[in-house]
Amino acid sequence: EVQLVESGGGLVQPGGSLRLSCAASGFTFSSHPMNWVRQAPGKGLEWLSYISSRTNTIYYADSVKGRFIISRDNAKNSLYLQMNSLRAEDTAVYYCARDAMTTDVADYWGQGTLVTVSS
Amino acid sequence: IVLTQSPVTLSLSPGERATLSCRASQSVSSHLAWYQQKPGQAPRLLIYEASNRATGIPARFSGSGSGTDFTLTISSLEPEDFAVYYCQQRSGWPTFGQGTKVEIK
Image 1 (cartoon, rainbow over the protein chains, first blue to last red):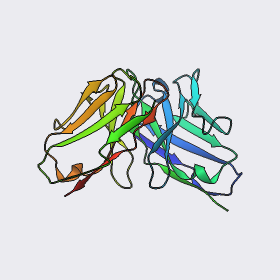
Image 2: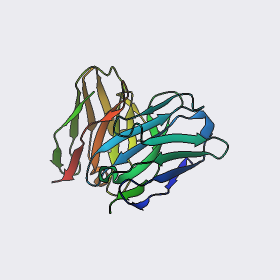
Image 3: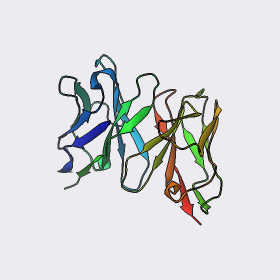
C-alpha cells in the first residue's frame, strides 16, 4: 500500500524557518518524481515544488522561489521541504504528492501537515 | 494557465447526475486531471489525462474534453460523492481550478 506521511509542521514566527519531511513507503520511491502542494485554510490548492526522481530537475512556484528548497533522499525514502523567511501567507496545510511513473499526474497524496506562521 | 470551474456550488440529490465544468485560459491538450477532496482529507485523484479513471475509481465518474473545455460527470450521485472537486492542468506549471462544491440538496 502506498503511504506518504508528512511531519515537521507547527507554529513558527514570521521570518522563521521550518523543515518538512515526507516519509514514503509501499512503492519504489526512487522511481517517482515528487511534489509539494499546499492549501491555505478554507482555500484552494497551490502547487509549490517538483523534484524529479534523481533530483536533476527541480521547479518552484514564484511564490516560494528563493525561500523554499525541495530535496529528497532516495536511500531514506524521504522527501523534504526547507522553508525559510516564512510569512503569514505561508500558513497552510502542506501535502507531499507522488507523481505517477508514466504520466504527469499526482496519483497519491499524504494526509498533510499544518504550518502556522504567526507571532 | 488559469483554470475556471463552474458552477462554484452544485446542489443535487443522491441519484442525480452531476456535471462539472473546467475551462482553461489556453489549450492544455489533454493534460488535465480531476481530484475529489472531502473535509479534513487530502485530495484524491479521480481522472487523469482528461478521461482516464484512476485506480479504484468507480465507473460512475467520467471525464471528457480536450484543449480548453473539460467536463467531469458523476452519473448517479452516491452519498459519499458530496465533496469539493478540483481540476488541475500539467501542460505548463501546474495550476488548479478554484473548485466546485457538490452539496446535498
